[in-house]
Image (cartoon, rainbow, N blue to C red; front, side):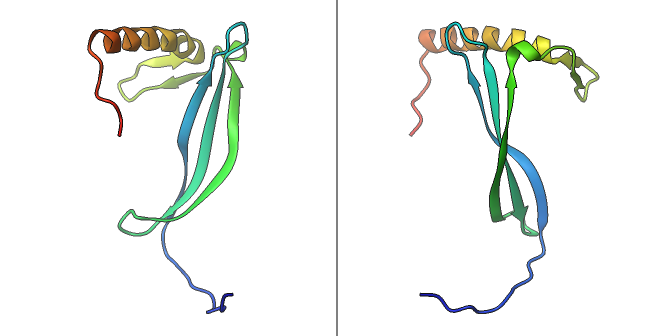
Length: 106
């Protein structure tokens, strides 16, 4: 049971953000990137007031290519460069972890 106590007005900042990104790379399949987004409202101190999921963004690697972003230092990266670089980082990180295992997350 609940009692309606009326409406409240809360002042805050609303933004859309990425809360999780997953790369699905099944053997023999076109890898895809799934980006989960959310709308968040923060109060004046930055504390979370409301979180709301929005539809995920999905991109297949084979369809990515020439679109680009420019980093703060002026470096321009294309989607194709990022897709090519990620597996190199993943392999390097795995090798580093085999050589010197990191602490387990709690």
